[in-house]
Length: 100
Image 1 (cartoon, rainbow, N blue to C red):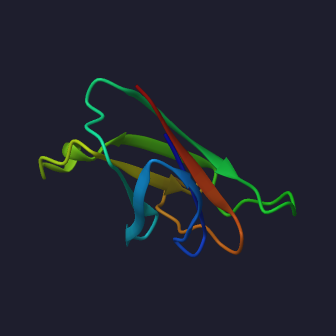
Image 2: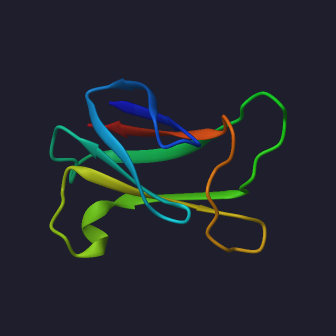
């Protein structure tokens, strides 16, 4: 189960995924159509091809860490080199992967 999003919050490719929403600066929600509590998950950056990313760190966790009892979603956080939340720019994006 994979969802890929670009800097415009658009899912550019997906399989068995719901929607990718921007929640705030550098914070994205990725919802899937299954309970992912017993699954593994990861997220990686996608570079637009120019060799420059606006961010340096990506973290991912099950969305329930926000206390909203959402067991079908991930929260993906993006940070710059100073550790501040940052939105992706241009065609840069990320891919969230869930393995059950």
